Image (cartoon, rainbow, N blue to C red):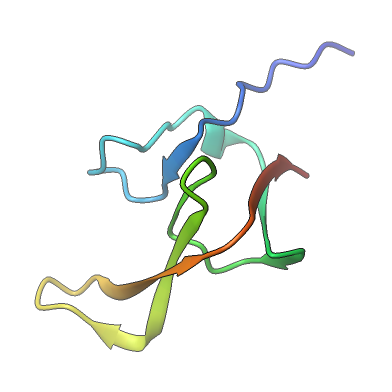
Length: 80
């Protein structure tokens, strides 16, 4: 069985309007481990800088997108 999954980028965003969005990666199931715990609510991450962005509760901005907060720590991205 050949592995045709693209390499995970250092910086990735789920927002298709972002320059850091890579659609080919989202065709596969990916996971994010932050400080040793798997997170399912990550909107954006950067491995080299060590941060993730997650929604801040149910608060929305004026365009209807969730407000995010940046958390710093050890970030690991992987395919499930």
